[in-house]
Image (cartoon, rainbow, N blue to C red; front, side, top):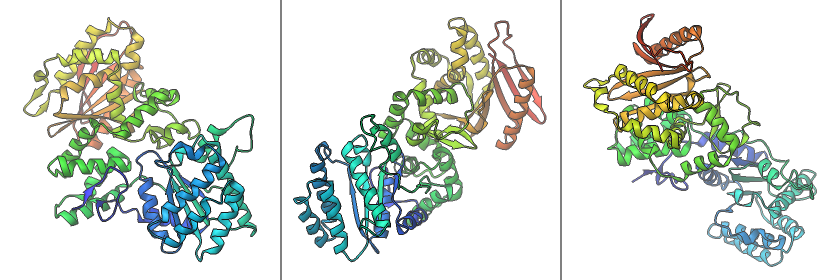
Length: 513
């Protein structure tokens, strides 16, 4: 029986998979054109599966050496001789069970290759003896990313490529490297004032522009396959859009949500089921989330820009070069010309992580003690009471902290306040499309009801009125008649007001804190 897979390579015969045949055709065209390139994408982004499927297609017309540095020890990179011998051993192992002739040929060259000059000559001899063009794929090249010997290896491939174009050598028709870092990042790590010869070992590489994330239409192909195999009927188009909304097509997250629904949530293929799957994913311990937090904490530039976007609610123009690391690690992306956290699940996971910071955690502990039953009725949440209580808490707590703390963390405090109230029965997320440096919308679902709460920093009556109009427009999009606004006013002489306001045909309850 097929399953949704979140570990290792996806196998079409064993796993439900998104149809990526169009992506494979795009990459195959690059190979046919003789391109050398790097498939550099974040962790668990489908690189290895893509290279596996690509190899199956290329095998029909080419000889493919498909290998990886995964699991390779450090000894291979210690000396030029060690690398040259071991690379032939890796080549041999990659074809051991598929091409016995080529396997024996590679084995023969292990003992007669002592340096890169030998390696270059021997590759020429091998390719000349074969009746098909040869493609080289090396996955997990990040293991070698700070290694001089590997840079020399790339330099040899570059020189052979250039000579081949002048009809003065034979080499691999195409070379494909797979990893998180592209060669430019490897180059930066290797740069050394004492040796400038390694500054650009891979400047022959073509740009890799194939979009590896999944569109909603592509996600639907997997749901349609699942529906066909299991006989379980669902609105595949609607669910694919919802999965895309939360994951932005991040391959691991797409499969994770589907796996949760299929195996752990009674096959609840509904919008509510997807929300349950998201909540389940957010409390899951996995290496992807570990990597996100590690990259956040180990890179001050990434941490700073994420804080500005998520805590301060600031809009930041997208600039690949300024935010290269965050984009490369899959944490950040572009959305409508602005920088954004890659997907809603990452965003919520980071919010949850930030809520554990000491001062916020201390406040959260106080929030847990609040009697939550006063906010819950048979229809869902009494948001008016909920916001009035938040106003009361902020009035009491405001005097305990400096103004700057609240101005910086006010929105985060509100999310911390909501958390114990929703506590398993409800769900909330920040609507990134409406966020700017003046406002941020929180979408809450509880039972079958949806609530929109706009969080806004006071910047004068004019901007307050503008915010009310924008919220009413957003309510119209969401099909709601009632909305809520929390205005953070940091003036010392402010009044803690709360009132219902009529904006067109919408009712909005506004609270000043």
